[in-house]
Image (cartoon, rainbow, N blue to C red):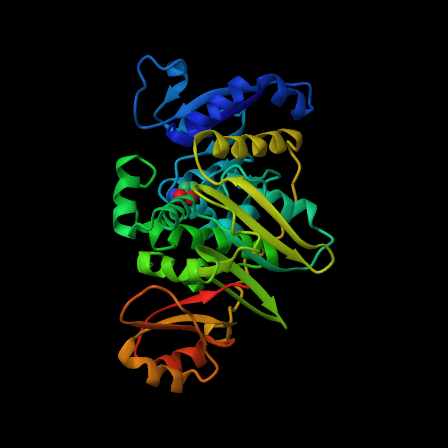
Length: 402
Ligand code: HSE
């Protein structure tokens, strides 16, 4: 028996138990050791009377940590406290930890990986980015012959759902958010999603794996979708484009930058068709070119499936280290002032002349929006754009990803 403990019996934790129970034949076969995976403990503050796994529910983490039979722990608690402390202690005791906790991975990934390896066990986090989409394992084990120079993703299901509905219905952000909250698709406190903080942590993890060093999420320029309006979508339609919250990182000529922001993308962009709660990640390697990973980026069973895939990996490698190149040394990110894009700009009609003086080679966008003048600039750095925008009296701007 390979004894497993689940810490946190919420949406993802209960999904982990369900996946292991439903697919036990498949999972046991794939663990390859001729041994079955068994959930020995479920740690939670609450009791679950009537739950089929009620007898496994415990409230004291020491029971898990002091049990030498437990070799693998699924950390599905979320947040930094007490997950960081529990994880660290488990790894120091040689117990592998599989997690969906992007906050913890983004904040302490390299330290926890190092502690795991010093203790001949593993800290795996496939479920922390893109829910059920395999993206960590491809970066770690599949694309090992590549120098990856660009990652572009839709990494947040909530905002993609909101933007998809704004596009289809011509509705405003606040109305769609309210409806999504009522239907349970968006959190009651939606800040982490709509302000881009969730996508920021996820691109920090992917960027770190891309360059093998630590990309601090605190250093990533992050802009959410709260300022996107139904009028922006009128213009997007007129241009044959849509608006997506993209998380991206780029390495260009030894310089590295990462950002999260809404972008206009055209119909030929690989992420154009990624709608509703789906996520997708485009990875560019110098030999392979583009590859794309698509699927359900959130939800109980897709996320749990990714956690359990890590359990299988740990079971196959009991007492052995699975390589993961994520050094603790921080990457000095280039400020996004140096990043170049074309920008879509809206100004009020009275500022048309001023705007055209500030942006000489602008392509005018015709759309049915009274009292406004809109255009797309030529490609320029963020710094250059901000300088010119000061003189143009702009209403808003959205970057283009091409
Ligand atoms: N709030 C996240 C999302 C959940 O909407 O994508 C998955 O990390």
